Amino acid sequence: MSAPASPALRWVAALLLFASAGLAIALPFVSATLLTIAIGGVAVAAGIAQLLRLSGGDTTSTLFRLLSALLYIGGGIWTLAYPVGSEVSLTLFVGILLAFEGVMELASAAAGQGQARGLVLLDGIVTAILGVMLIAQWPSDSLWAIGTLFGIGLAFSAVNLITAPRASAS
Image 1 (cartoon, helix red, strand yellow):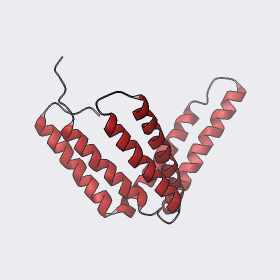
Image 2 (cartoon, rainbow, N blue to C red):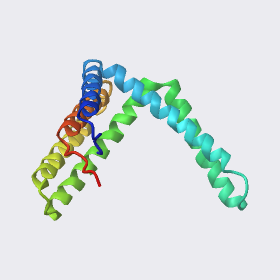
Image 3 (cartoon, rainbow, N blue to C red):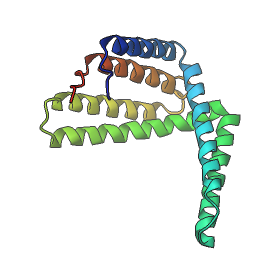
């Protein structure tokens, strides 16, 4: 993460992140639903972008792009139409993603020699445990987990912003 050089700007950004984190944690269902809606909107936009790429090329590549576009648009519209139901699937996906990321962080810590190796190891352990917990409790935790995890992630981003070393003037 790149931190602003200005200490005042750094603190303003960190305070905004902390405020957003507090809201996401206090209202996990709302934040999870808004995140799900945003993902649906991005999927529709990606599908439209795929449709815009249809001109030119051979018939086979055009067909595959068309199928990809329809999948993006259909999935995005479904997510926008049924955001709460989509949160259930999204929670399982996030659990699998976190478990995989945690294992990769553990491998990185095992292979690395940097100063922050202990923090990378801790990050890997916590991330893997969170992923496994989401998978184990799925689908019962689907309506609050994503919003809460998003809020915790925002809080960690704020801490990282405050504690990141200043950019050196080169």
